[in-house]
Length: 420
Image (cartoon, rainbow, N blue to C red):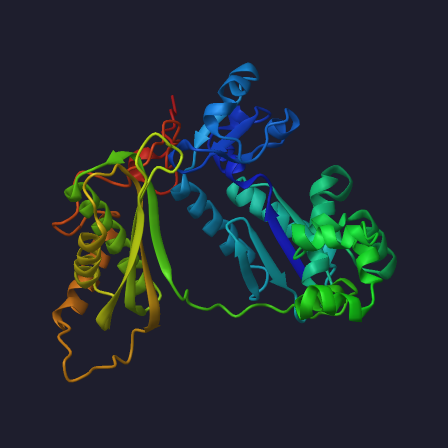
């Protein structure tokens, strides 16, 4: 059996954990640089606030309905997500983290358990321990657990936020209720193709012939069909290291000087190096890109990227910053106003063993130096130690006018309780 645990309106719920006065108040969360709406509370959804609406276009609507606005607080959301996932691991060793607010749980050897009651216990434990409301769907397969989760979320009072598809009657009823466009794994293109032949819900999809599904949706669609029929085909995915790591950002303002872009590229390469070391990988190549603001047609436009092949595999911040700046120097043009840049490390390999060659000029001292830098940044906070090419007084240069406190990750921003 599988369960899908999903945080309800996760970003908004994280804000409410530390601000109980926001209960019942419509909330929207903005993307990086306060660009567009990326999350909404149920109250904001009821007011017709759409996802992806640019903030500048929604200001009047937000003011009219007194909607509370927050800039994305990824430090807070990431920490709350980690707490939620760790609680799930108390209930089963088999946990597959699917996204920041979703995880699949596998119940192997739980034959004598009342899984509906067990799901209720998981839901209540997460709520009591973190303050985060969740919905849980339980079923024989992963895709059916997804369907069950939607039912639990849609009818929280009736299901107590936990729904268990434990028999054939429930499975068929649930699939007939689920629109084909809402089925996990069926995108817009396949949804339109299925609707064109009269398939409106998930149950009708399971009645399609294997031949048709395989011809029009490949083996992936056929696996999904069998999974919805109750045959556990979609298994837990093995946790794999990322095959490339990117750090990209839009700037809070435009830059024209090389020194400003060099500082940003250095910081991005430094971040990529940290992530490489965390997963014990090294990069053999690095891509650098810069671009102007494509939304401003009145300005001259320029976009350029370059891939620099490294002479040796490395995860040293010093090495990666050096080659990233070299790449930037080859694509930079002074006459443009730059709004975005990024660094992507590619062609990754394991950190050990190193594949040395006759012309290797890798500095063996970098390994211990990087370990020391990582430990200092872990003990005293991120960005405590930087390279000289980085600006010591700057963090990520993002517009975040409505940023909440990092209640759970920064001692300077924790809640102060008045005990008088």
